[in-house]
Length: 321
Ligand SMILES: [Zn+2]
Image 1: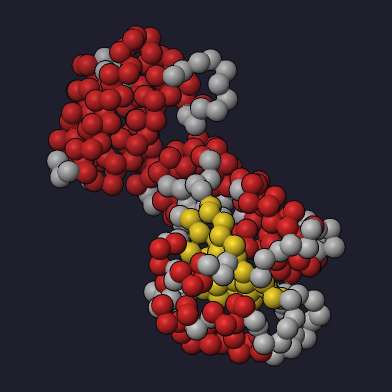
Image 2: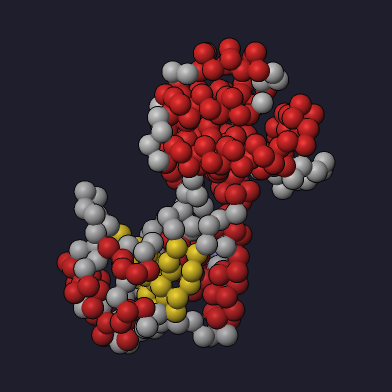
């Protein structure tokens, strides 16, 4: 879990929670919703740290460390069990049973239900009374985590404080991916393929990633049509695969978008380490970058509508230079 990175990249939400805590106005139930990889679970743990840490949730002290390691008695995390696809009714019963007992440790308690949107409506509804009024009366905070808000019953939604988690900005995501020991350029390229740092690491571990990355760098280095024909012949097998061509197109489109708006000293470029390639490309195609962006975005749509990867790759090599 990259809790400190999420605190930084979802800082708006963190600040709201922090001010609610400081003003003693924390809600008794939160519903964190948003796409996979947007830091909902990490934020739930950051909130737990705020409750018990003497420094307001530093993430560094022994208390914070024990929370983050899942060892704090008053922090309970429930998620979908291995080999299951949903939160089970029994887990929700267990949660209520657990909270009907008095905790061994004093102070407020927090439970996190990761995947509430996967539980059946009946299971979700069985929580209603509990959310309003946990039996043992200790201050209790519930955090429900969902990717699909529409799958959370209205009766739960209306009892919770809703927090929407938007996608983490790509450059922040790049930093999170780099924490797994992945290089700067690889992390930048991965951040373009997914919004989820865990999925990015899985993609990185697939040998195809390096092959496609090397082929992308070679592609943007081609300087004339003759060399492009040679490039096509050398790489046609690699890009007869749908996932490989999808990744190449995604990076080429970003390359063209950044070339189209290129200004020197723009540190916010995702493809910053490749800016010498962008400059060379602009010199070759001159004012024609914009029409190429549009052509290649159209090409990416064709891939979705069943044109074969090989044909899409062929057209890409015709249109790029
Ligand atoms: Zn702390």
